[in-house]
Length: 445
Image: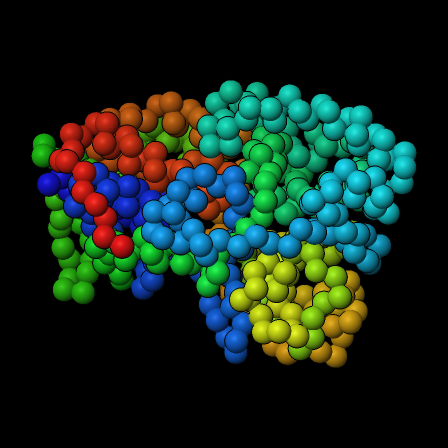
């Protein structure tokens, strides 16, 4: 039986390991932390259930939903509410996903002249979006030369950008729109198309189900990886001390910078990507209220004019039926604050900032605040600044597909759960193509 060692138990690593296990490989997953899932994390408190990392999937997440089906969770997929909203002049402007054109034409978000300009100039975006593969941007690299702000100001004008599009871009991109490549915005738009969904019981159910079918060793950080004549040697620190394992192949499903430290040959083909890589942290806060909101959009986009600190609100009780008890509200808040700034903010200051915005747009919640839950992520995603995707493409072109050490992670596309699964699945396919395998076996559920 062929053996593979997977470094990291986020969605990318677990996807790679699960697919290789299905093809008859013996899979060992080494995870530095004491849990699986990476940035996918679901927690519960006082009857409330919340995702403190990614909060949504879409019916366009094809590889993700294949895994959901394989582990027997298809019946747990639920559709989110149909409406989204944009904060404008201190109030919510609703847009109905079931009737997008009618909703757009009747919204008070934009004056009539701006709507006509949006429709007329929006056609210019069809060319880069048509046929785009958000996980392989090789035929769209020519757009990785300008920021989201520069492009959208030129196409739509500042008024439309400020009132509508900026809120959208802040929700969809991993960095400030005035630094982020417009190519990331295009790819995010393709990814976001479709019906928004979630999983009953929290999004962590998928990585937990994948891990249950694999040999996962927690609290086992890897310290080094090298090629040998027989395959790959991996050194790691376990409960019994330092250990060395040998395998036919290895998947490194960590941040790219960490991967280059574990496996130095990556530094040669990935030097440009390493130089272009920047990471961003995040703050995720869930606020519980003892009464329901009168409006039920599952997602609220927040332009800078409405809040400099807050990117997006997600109404968890409108997202899935098991997120909050009846007669209550649960709202996730995602902050947009530079790491050296938000790290110094107290929990009380962050809570007050979140409450001010929520209770401004949902005034019925005033005097009904119950509790807040805060998660600080030192690492949330890579940043898709101008030039990042060009450097990424050069790395993908240079790195040998037949190397027994392959990398996987959502940094190989724009950051998303689907990107992580696609990267893990692709790494598994490359290993299967380069290392002959034993006959496939059925993975026990």
